[in-house]
Length: 290
Length: 323
Image 1: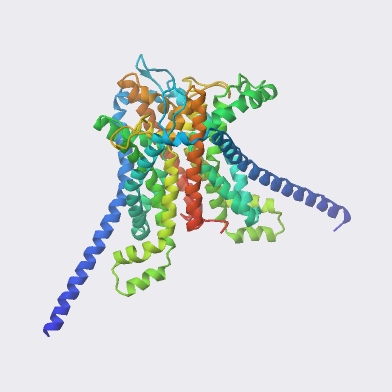
Image 2: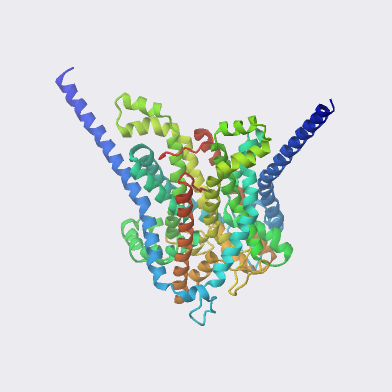
């Protein structure tokens, strides 16, 4: 070892160290960049939305463009009905599908179905809207809140199915074996022992799925269509909060824009409260992902 | 004797009942699982049937011809396909660059008290509805691009043709930026899972040889996770391709191939969202449905490829790093 080579080594070491530091700084910078849009969007929704918020918005229905004022009661109620019905249709099927994947999904059929569930989760929501349009709206001859619910039910299906499966698989084998050893039939072991143990996680998944479909507007465009009048008839065209935001935000009137911000605030608040609440109650391990 | 006989019959009856219960249950959950298959088959069947008159009339040329003329009943999706490819790929590049770095930071560098809230905040981005992105895109981002960001780009890079033009509220650039923000959580979260699945022994081995942390990432982590990260990026691509309302609200809705990043354009989902409720004739509706079918086929293929890539690394497990 000569002095010269050790000097060269020192230079090399400094360069390697520098590269390491630069890349680390870059990673931190990207972390900051990733958070900036969230902060900006939340800030604007809070600022613009809070300024336009009033009690009337919750108690009145949308006015025609010529008359400022009005509210979004019909949209709020419509959203509640459409989303509730979508869950009533989609969640039982999704949980059943998740149970199948967890309990009987080791074979080839299970692998294929698990794969298809993941693929279904990635198909654009507007395609579901077109599908239900052809399947229901055209055949029935009219748009309806029910058709909107069906489209949303297809969207929530893969989300809840996958989470149910994962939560069921987290239940320790020993618990199943103890139940089976006591002579309980398999189906009772699953429904009375495994399912209740996994239930908090599954409920979190369902709630997160709900917050996801509550914000969907694209699949409702050609199914529930939207309606500026108050209705609770699911076989009638029906409004939803995200649909109303879309109409008002892209419309030409200033008071529409203000109301769109107020509705965005309400929608984001509902979604965040639901998903944060679900996580706080049942743990943070579950994420909903495309 | 009689009692044990009765007991035996009872046992046999019980066993039969258990077997019946078990098969009923298996049948029930099996049927629920098969609805997924039914839905996917139904999607292809229904959309193909509904779009049939357009498929028959325009054939394969529908995909690349660019004339979209509802009154003349001439339709070609070329401009929409180009608009979709440009916005999705540009958004993908931006989101993957940032998302991969964030995922590396989360899994390799950040202490848990930073990693936890940071990955949570990135996931919250995914919870914001598409229409809210669109609203923000029109009134905040679009205005920023028109008044300050856009003119600066024109001054700095205007000598390159694609960066020249007149910045407006709506246009390609607005759509690309909104899309990158929207797919960032997907790319970040999936990359994070993939990176977390890299065995600790690999990293430790390279570190023990005297590598710096970045060299460890470059030599041990990235090569191992490469196909999974690619999968994460492609999953992001599938989201970007299908994203509807936010894009519809900011892209400007013009049926022509854009020449600069400030031009208005159209994507496949946004033309459906915009024109489907006011179709001019049967052929117009069928053409829009064919665009939907095209969208379904594209996202289906993209998703299959991406899932296979991600599965290869994570073996179906979702690794959660911060726990």
